[in-house]
Structure formats: C-alpha cells, structure tokens
Image (cartoon, rainbow, N blue to C red; front, side, top):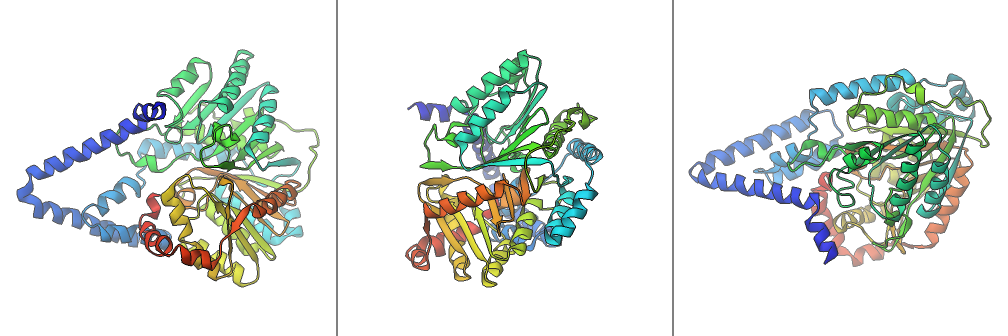
Length: 509
C-alpha cells in the first residue's frame, strides 16, 4: 500500500496522467471535427511522409533511420507525431548558445599531450589511434601519472567514496543520473552538509527523469537551502517535451581535483544491495587518482555551464600535481554528448572490437544494437576472437530484456558467446580485450546510450586496474548461464515473434 501511494503521489504519475488527459482532449477535439476526418487523416499521413523523406535525406546511421522509418510507415497516422515527440532533437537558440559556450570553454582548458601521444604511438599505433580519436571528438587527452582502481561491486566503491569525501578540503562535484533517498545517499549527504559548513564548495547535478521515482519534488531547491549548489538536469514537466529524450546518464564524482569516480553505480540503495529489487545487483565503478582527474573536472563543468554560466576559467579547479602518483599505463577519461552528431561511446567500443586479437569481453545491462555493432561483434568472432557478452539473468525492464534476447541467436550463430548473470541484474558497463585495453563507464550497448544520452567512460591501456577487471569478468562467467542455440529455440515465440515486434520500437525503449 505504501509503494502504491508513493507511486500515485509521484511526479511521473501526475505527468503521465496529464499527458493522457491532453491526448484525451485532443481525441475529443478531433471527434468534434469528425466530418473532417478524411482531411485530418490525410494531413497526418502527409506529415509522416515528409518525416520519412527527411530521415532518408538526413546524414544519420542507416540502421537508426530504418528503426524510425519502419514504425512511421506501419503507423502512418501517428508515426510522424511519435517521431517529433521522441526522435527529433530540437535545440532552442538559448540551449544552442549554451552548448557552444560550454564547448568553447572545454576546448580552451584542455590540450593534447603530444609527448604522451608520441610514446603511445611508439608502443602501440592502434591504441594511439583510439586515444587520438577520443581526444579529437570528446576533447579529452590521454594521461600518465594517474592510478586507477576498479571496483567490481557497489558496496566497496561506496565505502571508499565516503572516506574520500571526508578528506575534501576545497570542492566536491557530483553528477549522477539517479539519486535516491536511503542509506547510501543519506550517508553521503551528511558528509556534504558537514563539508559545506567547513567552507568546502559543493555542487550537485542530478537527472530529473532518472531520479523521478527516488526524490521529492523541487529537490534542487532543498539542496540549495543546505548550501549545496544544485542543478536538476532537464526538469520533468507535464508536457511531452523533446529534451526528455536526452538525459544526463553520467556518473561523476570529483574531490578537490585529485580524485575522480565514474562507472555504472548511481547513488541509491539498490546499487549497494541494501535494497533488493532484481536479485543481486552487480555493478562496477572506477576510482581515478592523479592528473587524469582534470578531465572529470572539465566534464562536470561542461554540463554545469549549460545551465549556469559561472565558470569562465576552469583552471581554478585544477589541482597542480607535483607529486608522483603510484600507477602505470595510460588513462583517458572521456565524455559523449547527443548534440555533436558523433557517437563517441559506440565508436570507442567499435575500435576496441576491431583491435581485439585474442578476446573481447563485455558487460552490459541492455543489448539493443545497430547493424554496425552487430556486424563488428560477429566479424570478430568469425576471425577467431573469443567474444563474450554478459547480460542480466533477472531483468529490470521486461520489454528491453526480451528485446536484448532477440539478438542472441544471430550473434551465437556467428560464434559470439552470450552469458546471462544468474544471481540477478548486471548493471556494469565494461569492455576488456587482450589483457591490454579496457573501458569502464556509463555507456550501455543500446540506442539511448549511443545516440540520446550524455555519457562518460575511462579508456585504460596497460593500467594496473586491467588485471582486476579481467578477474571480475572471469568470476562473473562462472556465475552466469551460457546461452545456447537450444535455449534460443526453446524461446522461439519470444525470440522470433515478440523480439522482432519490439525492434520496431527500439529507439523508444
């Protein structure tokens, strides 16, 4: 009863109710114009035709175009309206100006490290090309003098994070897709409040849609009252707003410019298994200490300045490292944005798949991929690379779970090995290849992460954390069920009937 009441009183419920009422009034208005049904239907069909022509003309990924063209043609009356509501990004002049200003500030404060790139070119030209791509298209250079620690579970990540927060002396930046009231966030909040009283500057960005079931209304104002500067990213409003399709899916913590965190772990109790929702919640995080933290600081300020133009000089928040940090290898935090027409998150994965010679392993909670990704995975397996992907055994969203499973048979036929994490839900977003290179971050193998969301990750080469990532993956394979062709045949209806239907709506899921 308590959960039901919580749901009914939630902002998302009221928003959905208002949207339904709007649709109802729209249909009622149409019924008053019943005599003009033919003209109205013709106008809606013409709209859909123009949108299909626009999609064909638009220089986008053909798989993404097709994913929209098919449902528009199947539902010509409302297909065009559906695309305008959920598929087409309309950027206001004000937001466009903010994006331009924020990008200019980012580029102004970041520069390539030619000496490091020369060393990397000498060691491994393929890895250097990946690093060069990430710098050119995300603005984030590769770093040395940095140590990375990998966390295969949310609880130790949280415990270490609390210790680091206690040590903060100058500033704390937090940017998370989900905040949820409970033990995890409340313990963090206690420290943040204490730090504010000590004179530490604390800034918080949370995604309003991501946190809608977790936080009360106007939570950003509540934080401001505590002295915590706060931005609710793209606030949920009771209208079908276009920008709701573009969310801030990043998870970033920066402490004094010395320590940075990212990964799949949000700040809510299920991420540390204090609340059990979908079996055991397996996640991954990474802690970075050293010069590469500057990239996390700049990424946070990039988003902050989309909403509050308060930082012209990012370098005020750069820690001047003079000490030598224990750790080896190359570390490159990077970000991705839906507004630059460059799918950095997906392309970084594609580059890794193309680079792999012996094996390519991946953790992802969702497997909703376009033709390029599917082809790359299959070609790698066909050329003898041991390709393994782990997905959840217990889903958080049934429709996306069935859609994920609809890709299994095609991949398995080409030699890709699919595993489902038996104890519960795997939310980790990690890839690893050949004991040399890895990515840990927020980027799922799905349309939303690749095309619609603000994301981030850490690219690692010959870093100490790679050994811990490999051990975690090997341990996880042992806890997971290997999916076979026989398994796929037993799920014939789900795989061959429901799955293809869901693929028609994959950009919306």
